[in-house]
Image (cartoon, rainbow, N blue to C red; front, side, top):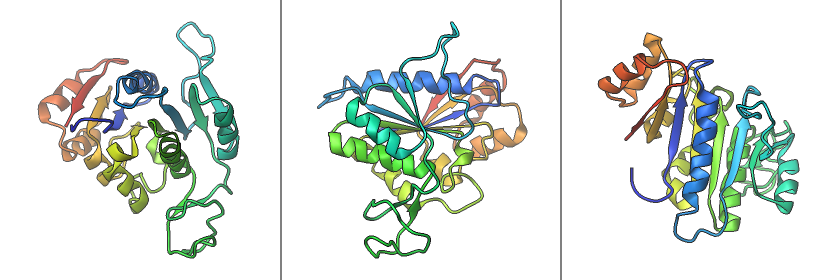
Amino acid sequence: MSGGWNYTIGVYGKPGSGKSTAALRRLLDLRAEARKLPGWRRAPYLFVFEGDGDFPRRGRDGLRLSFVHDHGSIAACEARLAQTADGIHVVRPRLDEVYCSICESPGRGLGRECSACGAQSERLDGGLAVALLAVRAARLSRGYAVCYFDEIAFVPGAKNGGQFSGWFSSRQAVRRHDRVAWVYSTQCASWPHPDLRKLTNEFRLLRMDDAMDARALRLSSVPPEVLDAQARLQYFEQLVYRK
């Protein structure tokens, strides 16, 4: 892994393995790490696109985590950011919150041509709208951001079975320059798009005992000895493999 803020992190684990807790801890570690980077001014923006409503909101003591803020739209999150950027912002965009991949304006329209700039562009909505929010936050603040997809299967353009988003692919290529760290989780190793698995440079592996999971990870260049160790993991245990 090259230096700087250069992360695409996959958290892989079957349901109940501790995947969401592992992802939360990694987000908090990234927040601490950003404070040691050159040009640090403030803690990084932390954004979560929640696919299945399973992102942790309570600690081990059962008390609600006060630093986790829920937003029912991109607009609501932006209004909160204008007051304070602290904490983790869990965002569920509205269906009408659609953006152009070229000019980044809202109201992209339904056709291939952007109604604002007229370009043939990609529609960014759902998880990719939250990704754009992270890119813009890092750019405007000249700081850092983290974008976490809670269950990548809920992000068209990043999940397997469809075309990999050209805009998202380009953001992976310049993640260090964007100053955005990307994190995603999955219950099944074959659900992330193969191109995303190839671009992942840190695998956080929890319990997965299906042969199809091992095959998908092997095709993602995870070594056999790492997969053998993963097969022996108990619930809430994890190992880390970095390319």
